[in-house]
Image (cartoon, rainbow, N blue to C red):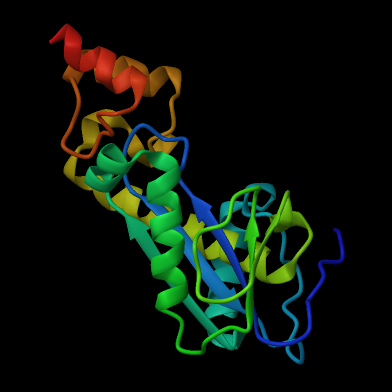
Length: 196
């Protein structure tokens, strides 16, 4: 397990979950960790089991200096495009923090416009502890939201693929058309709608 860096000061890590799926919102999280209370086992959420993510999410909420989760809706994704909607969700997450960070570090190669110095860190969720923590909160919150959508639209199998473009999801789209929570600006959904 890599030893993740905890930068000094009030540094907020930011990450998102759900840029690639065909359905559901994009979710972003912002986390300021306490260097005096390191959380063991933090890593890129994609490299952790669902059970481990859930356990770590509880610890992050209990031990972080501050954390917030926000989203951009399917309607905003379709109106703005996925990149701009992701940046909007990140801005909302930072705005939701109870403590204002001195600077922000974002997973990836693009930064949202924020009122503090912001740095993009490629593969940051595997390098910086607060970004890893944000990736875990974003992923667990989004997965829980997709399970709630599964209860409303069980025919799509959101509980299995979380809205990502899998063979089963494409088959469900073909059989049932697009639901109100599908992203109409994404090519596979748009193609499906044009067939109807």
